[in-house]
Length: 345
Image 1 (cartoon, rainbow, N blue to C red):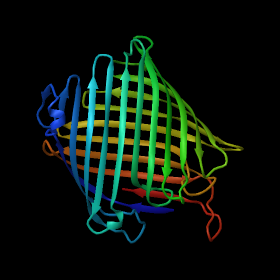
Image 2 (image 1 turned 90 degrees about the vertical axis):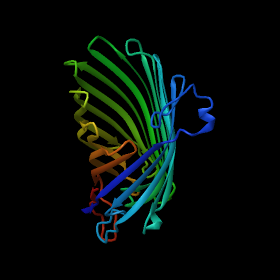
Image 3 (image 1 turned 60 degrees about the horizontal axis):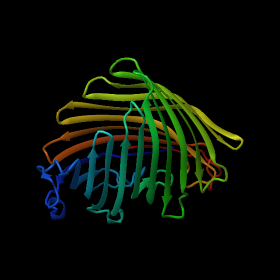
């Protein structure tokens, strides 16, 4: 089993840009830095983010670890438009990361996202979420940085069925396309339904069912899957929110089957006005990006602490775990071998 360790510490400076003349000239009101530019119900927020990162193991090597310091410069524009019936939020961004010594790891990324909600829960509320990223990112299958395009689209609807019962349905699509020919593109289509019942004014029981299909250029057969989760979502206070679901997953791949325990959890705690702690954990099945006819069972977890040192400077410390357990043996010079990896960052 391959194990890799890594420690990353980042300090972020964030500045809202309010001196864009073409926006300011048409603004009905110009807010202070950090509030964006008001245009009726809309708020346009151009920003510049500069992040300094100290990384103890840039390439996540299991030996001969290389440490370095990088500077990330990110520029973008966010849009928010909130009215009684419509919530529209989105943004575009681009970034450049430059390393002090490991210049081969320098890269530029860009992306965009849109989130729309229309209607009220008492009637029918419609949802659209879409995002696109073109990024250089570590691929856990190839074990190296790969340039890839990530696409995500979700459409859904939800409503309050009674004063305590809520229902939601959604369809989602996501895909990953690699620039390198040594990694295989893959995509996922899924449909889900969720029912939530209020137990108290702060806690609700929920059950979620999902069906879908995983497709990959590496595999001749798609994987049809079903997942059932039961759990809770809660807002204990304005400072502490969370949700957890546990259940069963089943993936049918021709005559083969991958099944087992499934879970997903997330929590956020505003410990002080300046400090926020977030925790996430889940597991999933994805097509192997490099090995044909194979799938990997992924277990992930993360903990992050963010300290708002000033209005424009934030320090953050994040710890992450990822385990990849390949379902089928992988061919090698020594014969077929079991492929597993664990990465701590």
